[in-house]
Image (cartoon, rainbow, N blue to C red):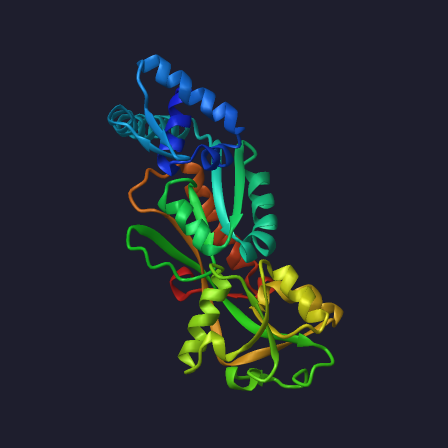
Length: 311
């Protein structure tokens, strides 16, 4: 019901990019440009300065942005309070998740949530942890779920699960019969890494530094952008890798990979991340509550540990 032109303008102004706004809104870039142009015609003034492929808000644009933020926030509150009176849980949620969580945790969780709340439409954005946190910071998504610690004090961060990371090796690898392995023991073997910006990479780099070594001490032969590509490379005997235990249930069952516990153990948090002072849509609260309950019931199967405060 809120003015679509205002919603589109607000998204463009927030990210200062017509292309990124189009991706966020699931619209074409020409459609986004048309909506903004209509609003400029309505006010009979430019809302953006466009120079050298960059855009910035004009003074009028800044004024409209401030009011748009208040108007859209009040609209969300009104919509939510009316829905609460009628007992409905409905609307659209834009969720962001880092790669491991999106591929191995969310499909089943969101499927079960949708069966319970059929009128809630969920759109999922997938990226590495840095990208998802940036989306939350820029108010581009309602909720982020990431796989590395988040240190921004302006964000509300709730740890939902503790995930264990392990070393995976081919079944015929010299290390395959070991139960535990240290970073020092790994140094002589070819290593496959996740890309920079990945939550896994960030946690692993920190862990290596805690052992008195650095990323450059490893024989890195490849950097890949997803857990699936890393596993395939290890199965092909390109190298060894550290991955979430959550991602290798199928390979362990089929016997195509061996998993070794790291010594000392390596654990990381899976966390919900959202704006601290942003009005929370009722559906977000329902999803958070559902996710916590789901992970408690499935913690053994998923390879998670439950933080004490959530038990």
